[in-house]
Image (cartoon, rainbow, N blue to C red; front, side):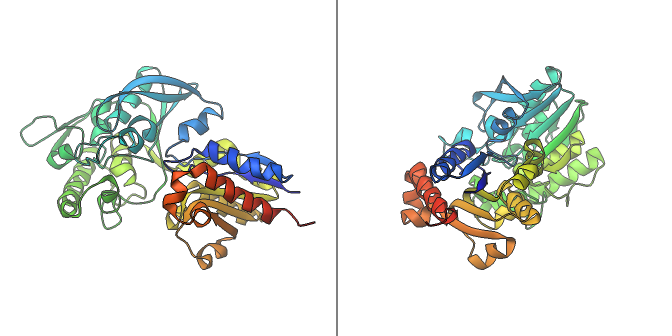
Length: 368
């Protein structure tokens, strides 16, 4: 039997990475395999859960969700280092009970939680930016930290996309601390692959509003560059979380880093791949975005580099065999194929994931 590393990300909106590990491990262990389970994240949903399993301590803080409603957030602490996960504080999952409202969705909660971390003594703050609900360019983040963003009349704008459109000036504030943002995309702030064009529709922005909002984001980019004397328009990853990464880079001097790489280092992913004979990863949707900064894409790359066969278990796949096999993937099993459709699979995700894991176990177990 094989030593198998099971290292998936979450199945978004259905199963956590920990639940995915447990389900797959159960089937593999029943077939006699030795399993090393490693839930992963890449800066999005579940990042806090992962870091809390690897040396950090969670502390609650009052903040607001993606639509400004009071919410209790969790800050992960290790010494004077703090990590705030946007998805957990004010991300899409916090407003799933409401109709999409891209004009009022805000990153304010992230700023408030980060401010609380500083007030509690953090000298280093990491913002994990995946799973956002907003495309406010980071206006909410800055106002939550104490910056004042003004319109042409000198009034403070609202901390959302509606405020971004009116932004004309920024009053500076020295917030202190060393800042880092973790991203799972490489999109720049503006342009065809920028925050508005790519992520706006995902947050509910209708096509008719794209030109107006794109123009507003370009003005915001110019304002950030002028006020903070830094070039951020074409910065890789600046468009993450609807432009929050670019605002953090400009106003806070934050470094923009791969969330998947950060988690890989924290969890000793490379060492654990090396110790395994077979690697299994997965996520809800296995597609081209997987290789654009997502955790499963990094797992696949590491397995190929080290020379370990890697299998993918996913909710659905948007890739043909000719696209994944050249990357070193030995096989792909999807819940949607087994269930007959993605809709059926999503209604009972645990059941169909278990079925996919059982099929994987059959592939890995030599017939007698």
